[in-house]
Image (cartoon, rainbow, N blue to C red):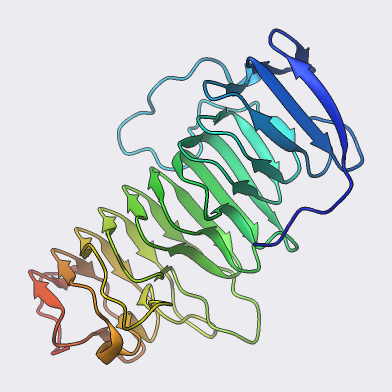
Length: 305
């Protein structure tokens, strides 16, 4: 993981203290700023008590979004601004933030909701977990230039996420990662390399991709809407990789399994609908993968794998 720099100044903020329009409802908060002011200044690092909530008053109280909503809900128009963040205590809840750069999750059971994260071309990921981190991401829009991907790491779950207009991979799913009811679309790849909608990393253990729209689009720089490319190929995974109920489109191979012979996890690709127009064929995976009820959107059968 890339750090956020060294030598920040530190300010202690206790419960009940409001800073501008952003209320820090916490037992104790340590805010480390690297120049500038907070909120709105670059690169604060926030350490929170286990039951802490870092909410933005301007965003209003949380209400569940309407059915079919993805990304930042339309009713949330005012957000608290921030530069890149690192969250390092369990249980933090970030609600109603507009982050330029990215969020590093370095603690378990973090929640990021009703927020927007915009890539600044320097911060590798929009949201990423470290070896110590896990996060639930809800009703969040990620857009802009993330040199690696909008989301990355192990042990993250995403619900109603919108990833739009990004320059590199949409999301990289490590072990224990899940993405549901989300939309990944309208990529803006930079010249000189392939981008993918989703890349399944790690060993492929306990990964779920369900009921999403992954629209990579056509043209140069677009690899696969969904790429199975484990970084720990050859290691036996503890759980299955499940890809079901999605709408998938774009790329040379819309779904492609990299180095199929080295894949040691169970892969189930079921009930997906493919757009026509893949550069080569829509589905290129190992014969070990379980395929069932995958068709084109118009109901036509897919060609052999």
